[in-house]
Length: 219
Ligand SMILES: Nc1nc2c(ncn2[C@@H]2O[C@H](COP(=O)(O)OP(=O)(O)OP(=O)(O)O)[C@@H](O)[C@H]2O)c(=O)[nH]1
Ligand SMILES: [Zn+2]
Image 1 (cartoon, rainbow, N blue to C red):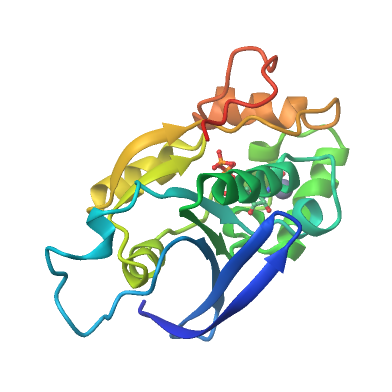
Image 2 (spheres, helix red, strand yellow):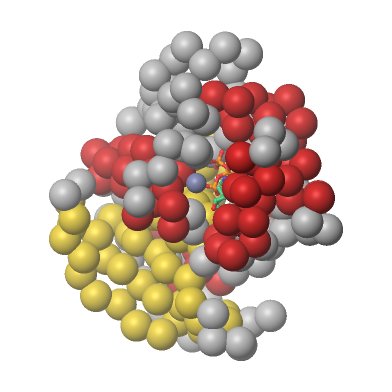
């Protein structure tokens, strides 16, 4: 799959001003990148030694998969909304970073299937089994858009905000240096503690044994 840059604009938010960039794949699927303190690299020329990337800090980057229910509707079933807001705030405070907002809702199974999975969760199944019972993978996401999106802003080394080992592994295996993993544990509540425990115990996410730490975010 190839990815093309389409357009950019300024986006003022309650966390501060970002640049918003839209990318599209061959099938017309859109992905979004928010940036602060990073400039677009001329894709037609090779990077030079006086490239600005050598003078700036390693950017703080969050790869965030779409979660309509959490990001827009303040759902308490997951931690996505608080994670997105905390990451946006931290990136603004750091002065240099990006959010890659990937349109792969429901860990890549789509919104309708995620809600089908929620219906199974209403009957007592956990987040992983619910996907499997629908005949779908536990996690159907791909990350091959991240390389082209980061290349567009000249980023080949990141401080990655995540608890998900797959994201670290993907970037590392594809030539992007993850110089630091920045853990992010926010938005834990009675409704999502079990969901987070399943991600920790059955899906290998790097979450504390006990969810007792409000935020582990380095600025
Ligand atoms: N299928 C399914 N998807 C879910 C469920 N809860 C949340 N999601 C999706 O899970 C994804 C969460 O993605 P990310 O924000 O990238 O987080 P992550 O993979 O948990 O990794 P972190 O970087 O540690 O946050 C979003 O696409 C949500 O829509 C669920 O119960 N079932
Ligand atoms: Zn969510």
